[in-house]
Length: 257
Image 1 (cartoon, rainbow, N blue to C red):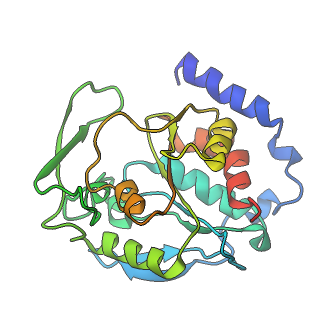
Image 2: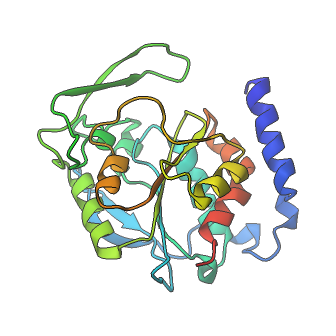
């Protein structure tokens, strides 16, 4: 881990002033080995894996949706969010959760789904573009030269279709979508929630990541006037994320209406 990142994460932990031993109002660590429930099905992936979400026990008009794992190679947020969900008591969960939008990609270690489609360029937004999209091999690479597809048509993938249908069903007040590794909180609306996340995760608040994202989940949400915040973690291991961001994720999961 770089000295800069290490210092940033330490600042995050110091800001909260919370250590593992201080978290006493939640499940004991010995009981966090599994989720209280295994969620509910909202569809299946291309390879037949169940698409699971964890509903808030008592949803209201202010209930949001928290998602991770749109890109299967971005594992830190998946694990850290699972750790937070396993830490809180069931009745403390105020918002719906999807740990892995792209379970096939998670299992195969792919950014894309099993069709080679970048799901975050496949949503049926007006700015969707046919053809190819590119990404960096890793955070150290300078060039975006690894090629993926945007899909045969907008919303072509089962994972995309199922998520759109679930959001239509749940009608969340907002969505927070976790990604890696840009180390920022992207909130086009500069909302109070965006500012809270930026402070809690010790990451800069921006209104744009600085490049076009046609067919992205955020574009699709914007067309529906659904506030969407993209929380980009830095390049960090799942182990470090589960330690450094546990308190911030618990705060998000338990945020009152």
